[in-house]
Amino acid sequence: MNDGYISVLNDISSDSPTPGGGTVAALTLSHANSLALMVARLTIGKEKWVDGHAVAEEIILFGKKSMKRSLSLAKEDAEAFDKVMSAYRLPKFDEQEKIVRKMAILSATIGAANTPLSIAKESFELLSKLPDLARYGNSNAITDLASSSELAYTAIYIASLNVKINVDSMENDELDNIQVTSDEILSKSKALIEEIRVIVAERMS
Image: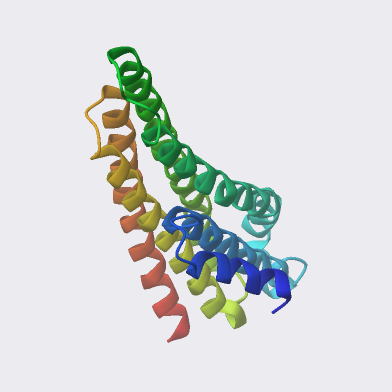
């Protein structure tokens, strides 16, 4: 591992609240994309895995963009939470300041909930492509495919926790809608990961 990678881990393990769980969810997605790309590239162009060529090509196109997107979301999540903390530090000595502070907190909280929701959406898009790669991709890389799937699902789960902690902090219709969308993604993801686990077990046997 290079110094940059170690630096990121040191930042996460510091006593600063950012980067935190949401950033880790996005970084987990980046690893899921990397493994999916590897399996796709080990599948493409090999006649033995011709049934997996189409989905492999799709994942290569998606994965390269999604890996960059996931890294951007990792940074965005930390910035979003920093805005929440900054909003709470605003003065509240008179009624006008209290109103400004309250609106700033709401706006920042919506942003802090929306970012992990974006991470969950991006992770779900990857996860939804993996059952076909699990079925038809290079079987020599089936454990790597399984790892990619588990990481994508974990990214969704972590992101959903970060959505919930922000939504639960305030009462607001927009936050409630974010929670509903997050719950739907998590529910669909549970079904997908179970499907992939069955496929992986069958191919490994």
